[in-house]
Image 1 (cartoon, one colour):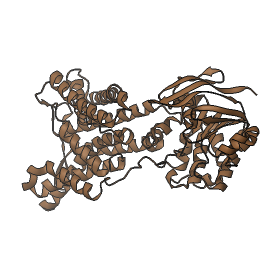
Image 2 (image 1 turned 90 degrees about the vertical axis):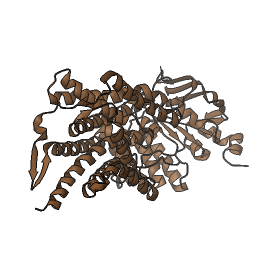
Image 3 (image 1 turned 180 degrees about the horizontal axis):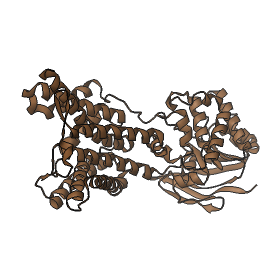
Image 4 (image 1 turned 180 degrees about the vertical axis):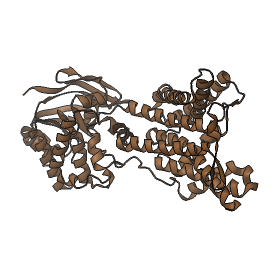
Length: 300
Length: 238
């Protein structure tokens, strides 16, 4: 095999893994927006908190890595639940701008909290088993096992999400509530429980993404959620915010573009973060609702 | 007939606007009771107040003798009061079958749900042919049928209906009222809000006339149908 093909294979796997991570985070943005029409700016910081929870579960509480990761995912879910309950629920009927500012405030709060409590200096995330870094050969391409794990976990979680949304009662209510909150309560459904479930699910997904991210770029620091969070948000907007398929497609689209452009035009590597915004501007120019359009409130 | 629902001195206001200024309504079990009145008379507000969907209300709502004024909407639905909202409010993104199933969200009696599902399909054969379609693809009349069917899936003791005939062709209006009578034959109680006063009064056991948040007249459906003031104001008879 020649070098070009090897590079392509390598880039495809990298794109799938990066795109999957963007998609995992984007799903959290889009689910919350779909229901509350709220952009949860703290979502990237929830992602960051997830990595710290995993870090301390393993280094301070000496849990085995798998238990540490599991605990971190659960605690991050709990964090999402608390943020909604404390910060967003009291403002549910307030003007949308108030919730938006609260979300930005929550983002600053979590970052500052992390700086004060965990410290501003990046910590090395060497808490995962060494065999994750083993190299697997596909032809001549050398791909770390972690890349396969990342891709596998992401696709598994998308299947889980699909199952929840389309095969369970709470998923049915989540799809209903995204169109009409009062009408859903008229079905005998507890609206608060459904919204809480959405936050728990989105935050748990962000924690998984955070842990996978921290293993890929093995360090954690309080502002690590900013760039991935922003890009995942862009992915959600590109896909059509509120649409889950859209968030997934948008995440992979962004991951592919970023990796492929840098991979084949290395001289442009310095501009890698710019591509996300260019794609955003171009797509919004031609399709302001994003790739997938969600049902908007029905006029009566 | 025993009294199943009683509204005592209900007041509702939106900001400074008093939508309902103290009304008393009684609904007997197994009857069709209707509230008629012009736009803005407070008909929908009354139903929304029963479901606890309004933010500010005073007075008391008693259901089977129990005070339900402060209960949450979900609890009220589970206790047996279900609303067919104005403008249908079906879920356009869910399939017709999912729309029906979500109506039974608060229930866990599988056999009962299955029985009600079959009953709804027998009531609306046209819905049965469209179970896999998204609700948003149905025509207006079919959506109204779906909204009624969805409410029946909640196994209501009392069905509250907010203008079910609004915006429908005359033939469909007739059909809606046929359905209402069939639901009554099932032993259910119906509190119906309507602008189509002729049809509502002709089918009602008892009726109230609402004017700007107050009840100005009440009586059996037939007596109001013959009442001169009602005929002039609501039935368009000179």
